[in-house]
Structures are given as structure tokens and as C-alpha cells.
Image (cartoon, rainbow, N blue to C red):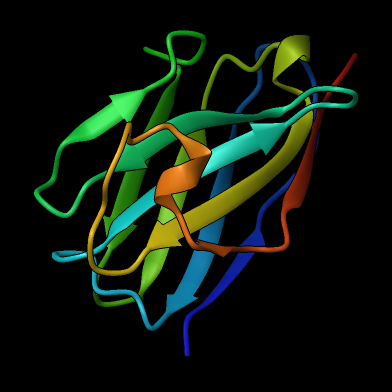
Length: 125
């Protein structure tokens, strides 16, 4: 059974940092695709960062240079390090996984068939 459980969200001031974690089970990082998405209030879900089975990483333009996606095989955990946070980064963040075939744009929702429950990030002074 595939399970994804996010943690690490919270309230942070603009310019601050947070690290989100996604504890996974049933995900094999060298053969499956994983990603982080976010959904702000009144907005659609947006792909933020993706890590393919071959190790290719993609970032949304809005977070390039500020966010870093990584994984720890031994801990079965996916991370999203977020630096220089902006008010516009406020959203619920979700991790997602595609087991087996990963077809489509790495930052597109349709690629992923498993989702976590989300963790809320609020950037505010």
C-alpha cells in the first residue's frame, strides 16, 4: 500500500525558511516519480518541484533558486527545503507519487496517482 504523510508546515516570516517532509511507504525512489505541489486559497494546485526516477529535477519558475527537493532512501522520506519564503508561497503543500510509469510533464497533476493529505505553510509578518 502506498502512503504519503507530510509534515513540517507552519507559520514563518517573509525571508524565513522551512523544511517540509513527506514520509512515504510503497514508493521506490529509483523507479517511481515524486513531487511537491501546493494550493493557495482560491487557486488551483500548482506543481512546485519534481524528482523523476532517473534523478532529473524540475522546479516551477516561481521557486527556482529558493526551493530544493531531495530524498533520503534510507528514511523513505521526501523533503522540500524552502528558503527566502515570500507571502505568495502561502499554501497547503502536498507530496505526490507516481508508481511505475511517469507519463507527462513532471509538474503536471495528471502524472501522479498518490497524494498526501497536505501540510499548511503560512508566510506572514
